[in-house]
Image 1 (cartoon, helix red, strand yellow):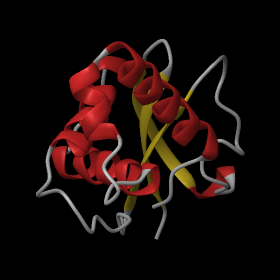
Image 2: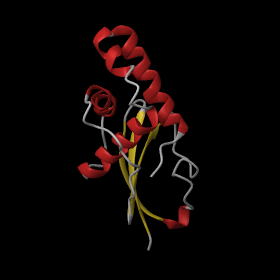
Image 3: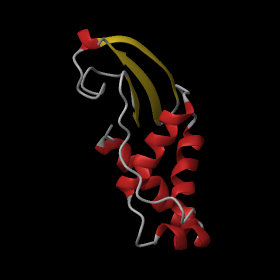
Length: 128
C-alpha cells in the first residue's frame, strides 16, 4: 500500500512545523537515516496492524513523531494488505472514487471509517 502525495505533504508540513517549535524534535527530524516515505510506510503499517478503522489527527501525527524519535525503527517496507486495504490520507470535503486509491467503485464492497479534521483513515474490503 502506498501513501498519497497529499498525505505525505500533510505529515511533512506537520513535522516541519513541529521541528520549528521543538528543538529536541528538530534533532530527531534531521536524522539522515529517516525519510518521509519510510515515515508514511511506518504509519500505514501501524494502522494496518492495529486493526482499527479510524484515528484522530493527533494519533496519526504521534505515529510520525514516534518514527523519527526512535532509532530502532528502520527499513519499514510498504504494507502488503491482501483482502482489505487501509487508506490514510488528507481530507477536505467528500471522498471521491479517485481518492479510494484508484479502485473502481464496483470492486468496493464496504467502506468504514471516521473522519477527522485533516486526516482520514478508511478501510476498503474488496471483492475477491
